[in-house]
Length: 425
Ligand code: NAD
Image (cartoon, rainbow, N blue to C red; front, side, top):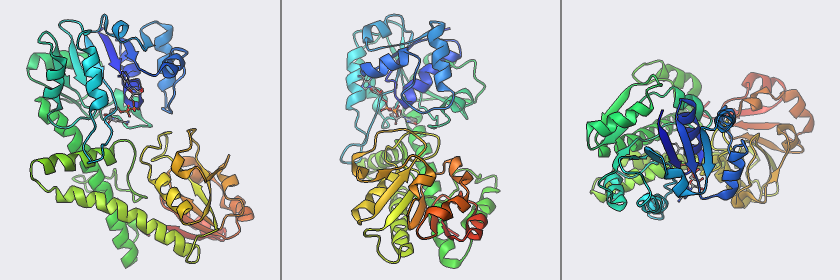
C-alpha cells in the first residue's frame, strides 16, 4: 500500500485517484476548487462517470481517500505525486502548460524527499525535462505515466487497461511506479520519458485519423450509394484494422482529440516536419461538420431561418456530461446563427455553454420534438434508440429525421412515415 497524492481532481484526477484508492492505496486528492472538494468529501462527484461515486464513497468511509485544498497536507506523507492538471490548447495550437507548471512550482518545496512526481496530464514531448528543471529537487524522481482512460468508462478502463506506460530516466524509478499498479493485470511498457510522452500523442492522433478516415469513407459511400455501416463492418473484421473507432459521426471532439492533435501538429512543425496526414484528419473533421450543416439546410427545404429543429444530444459522446469541444455544440451554434429555433435534449446535466444559450433545452427527447420540422441526432446516447417513432409522429410538424450517429432503427422510422437520412448511407 502506497501513500499517494493526486493533484487536480478533474475527469482524470478524480477517476485515477479514486481507482488507485480502490486497488489498495491511501489517496489524498488536492484541488484548488473548494466547492468541488466539499462536494467530494460529502461523497458526491461533480462529473458523470459510471461506478465512480460508489468508489469515492467507499474510500471516504474507510478513511483511505480524502479531498483537500491544502497542498501541504496532501503532500505530507505522499511517496507518489500524480499531476493531473489541465493542459488546454493555446492560441497557436500548442499545449498551454501554465497550469501544470505553476502546480509543479507550488509542490517543489513541499514534496517528500525520495518521492516520485508522476505526470498523468497529456504534455508535449520534452515536458519531462522542464518538470525536472522547475521542480529542482535532486532527491525527488520524476516519471511520465500517460493516462488512456475514456470519459464514460474511466473506472473500467482504469481497472482493465490495454497497457500501462511508464517513462523515466532509470529502471528503478519505473519499477517503483509500476508497483502501484501491481493489482492490475495489464501489459507494462517501460520506456524513456520522451517516448512515453509521444505514445500518448501518437495514440490520440491515430484514433482521430481513424475516425476522420471512416468519416471520409462515409462521404464516398454517400456519393456512390454504398452503406458506410456495412463498409465499416467489412473493414473492421480485418484484425489488422479492428472494428473500434470506425463509426461515422458528426466529427470527433471532446477535451482530448482536438487539443492533442493540434499539439502534435505544432510539435512536428517546430522541428520542420509537415505532418500532412494529421493536418488532413483535422481538415476532414471540419468538412464533416460543414456537410452536416449543408444537409440540414437541404432537408429543411434550403433554409433553416425561423425553422424549428429538434436536436438529440449535446455532449461530445454518450455517457459523459462533458461538452468541451463537442461537435454537437458546434453544430447547434451554427444552426442558431443561421436563424433556426433549436430545441435540444441531452440526458446529461451540465451548464449550457454561452455559444448555444439561445437554444431551448427540453426535459425529454419527446418534448424537444414538439412542432419541429426536423429531428437531428448528434450524440449516440442509447436511450435515443429506444424512443418510439410512433410517438414522435404525433408531435412533429414535418416528419424528417437526420441520424448523424446511425443509431435509430431506420426501417422502423421509415415505416412510421419518416423521411430518414443516416450518415454515409
Ligand atoms: P480538468 O480540467 O477536468 O481537471 C483539472 C482539475 O485541476 C480541475 O478540477 C481544477 O480545479 C484543478 N486544478 C487547477 N489548478 C490546480 C492546482 N494548482 N492545484 C490543484 N488542482 C488544480 O482536466 P482533465 O480532463 O481531468 O484533464 C487533465 C489532464 O489529463 C489533461 O492534460 C488531459 O489532456 C489529460 N487527459 C484527459 C482525459 C479525459 O478523458 N478528460 C484522458 C486522458 C488524459
